Length: 447
Image (cartoon, rainbow, N blue to C red; front, side):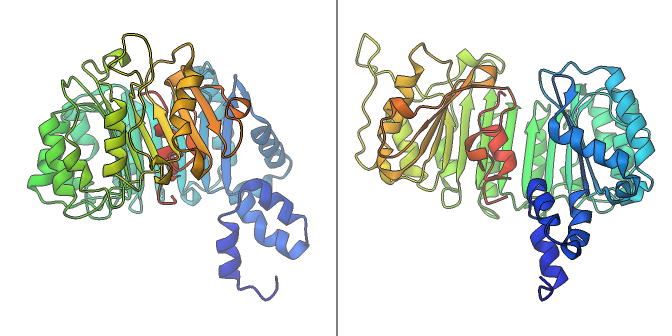
């Protein structure tokens, strides 16, 4: 290892998980000295059923016994399991812990807080990543606004509000004296975009955009097109209500400057699905596609279903798809009883698809539905089928050349369970390989 340049060694270490770093640090003292800053740069606190998980407990114990290691912390992440009942007491305890341990707030580069009651007792002026998905009061809003005003190197922003933020407050959130942001990733939830100028954060540097339950999306996308902002998007996720004509027009304009690799559309209050021609403009790069159009946004049973023939048509239009999610109806329309429709194409096994999410409620014999679909792809290797959504999500994995029933692996998924291959739906799953991690997490989770 003495001959390896430090820059190369650090690059390798930056991509290793904590478990591998811990084992490598035990090999020799010289390597241990290089690994230690990487091993303790992430303070990840994960709570399961109200208690820290094993990895969190071990990390906290080490930091308590060795206070000098706390100065190496650069990234803070706090996450609680969906089933965990989060109270103000949890937040107070974490606030006390963080305020005691973090000696120099300027060293922190990434801050992620997924529970409620954001840690607002300190400010981090040098953040490149900020994620707070359950903002609920004006103090927390002011805390977020401070970072938007002062973090000049911010590249990734994810902000969500439990209740819809008014148009005036939404606009004031992004009015900063610094001018336009140079964000690479932007995710917004529960924000009114009616008065927001998209030029503030939409630029050619923006690669990942997600909007969930935001009002004023029609005006927002119209302004993006009219101002010719030309974002270089690789992934786009839209969940909510908006005009289908405006959405289709934006996808057409977007194709002039970039090609999407991941596209998630869950649109409510619509009577017809999107025209596939506007998505087909991105077919050369598209690897993840989720289509879910509903008459009523929060009523899954109102989703418009796709037939087996339409499923085959989508695969023919998008030959590079690895992951596909849609309300697929397998029943043969010509049969009065429940008989599964046959696929007409004989070369489905040649397609790149390896993960399918059937976004319908599980029937009693859902395993047979999954096996029926997987059989068409069996020659190519492993094929994964998800059926259902949220807590009722079932996962079945089929392997090549084996008895499918004997090798079905199924489990009930949690609402935020990562999907596919933990997978670059499993976002590429990240929102990184070209299908990213964010993509995987959104593949089968409940909208």
